[in-house]
Structures are given as C-alpha cells and as structure tokens.
Image 1 (cartoon, rainbow, N blue to C red):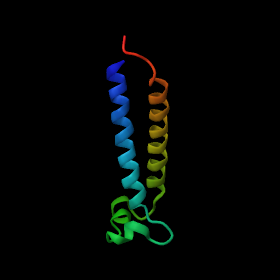
Image 2: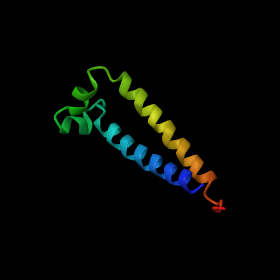
Image 3: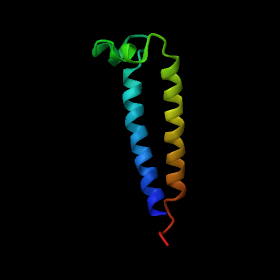
Amino acid sequence: MGFVRILLWVVFFATALLLAVLILLQEGKGGGLAEAFGGAGAETFGVKSGGVNKVTFVLAGVYMASAVLLHATWGQDAA
C-alpha cells in the first residue's frame, strides 16, 4: 500500500503543477498572463484552444480522482 500511496501523491502534485501552468497559459477574454509572456500559450498549443480545454478537463479529472483516492486511503495503516 505504501507504493500506491506514494504514486498517488506524485500524480496529485504533478497534475496540480500541470494544471496551474496550463491554466495560466490559456488565453482568456482579456489575454491574461499568457499575453504577458508574449502569447506563448497560443503559439505553443495552436490557434484553436479546443485541445487545451480538453487537456485541462482531463487533468482536472485526474487531479480530483487522485485527491479522492488519497482521502480514501488516508486512515489505512500499512500492514
């Protein structure tokens, strides 16, 4: 159970960091932080942001699932 818990923590923190970066690079109605870096988000992910929105949605799902699984395994002692 220890390996699974460590793996869940790694997935949890990795998706949290990826979500933060991905959300900050997305171009909103006002440009946002993506425009402050010269529009790097739009150039990196192409003109249409449909794929970026899907990736954000999938990452959010993985983040939430790992949080629920971490909570479910929180009180269990390693046997």
